[in-house]
Amino acid sequence: MIPDLDIAKKLINNVCKITNELNEKMGLSRGISRIHYKNVAFCAQKIAKKCGMDYQKAYILGLLHDYGEYIEDTVEGTFHGTAGYDEMLKMGYDDVARICLTHSFWEDIYDPEYFTYHSSEIIRAKEIISDLVCDDYDKLIQLSDLMSCGDKIVNVGYRIDWIAKKYKLDTSKSVLRKEKAIKLKQYFDKKCKQDVYKIVGIK
Image (cartoon, rainbow, N blue to C red; front, side, top):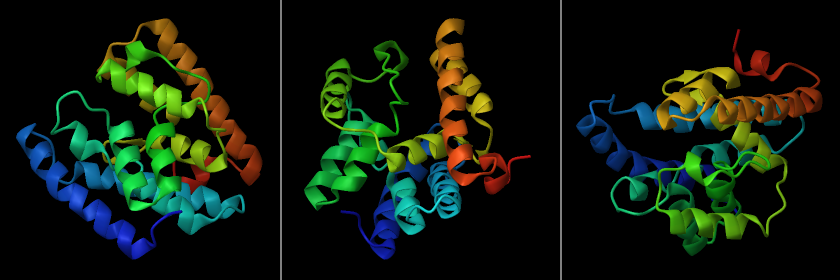
């Protein structure tokens, strides 16, 4: 289950009211989070349309993938993945709930050292995900998230390098993640019969 587009927009507007203030306090652009959510939704919709997936569903999942961010940033010891998962389940939006978790765990990579969040929440996320089979919508939002960095739509290598710098990952972890991210991108190249970078406007 997913919300319709109007409800999805209202939900993300509520999140942005909080993240705008938090971003400003951190010296960031107030609207940077909203741009990220919309960029992920845009990429997901464009790619979904090319490969015959439900593009409106893809847009809504992309828009709400980080729904739990406002909780993570305001409540100590929380992880936006499980926070978003819990909130979406309460609202009855199971498909969005799983995306809130799966977008953070690319394919078979699970590395607790990558996350700075409360360890018990990461462990809980892993336990929930272990019972799920990753489908094309999970993979699509993972890829779309990987192509959205700050206020830009970028290639996955750029985003992996940004993540590595932010989380101070060692070189081997960064290389492994880049290989997996490229593999994910190639999966959708094949489904779309076209380079997805061209589909979303990356030159």
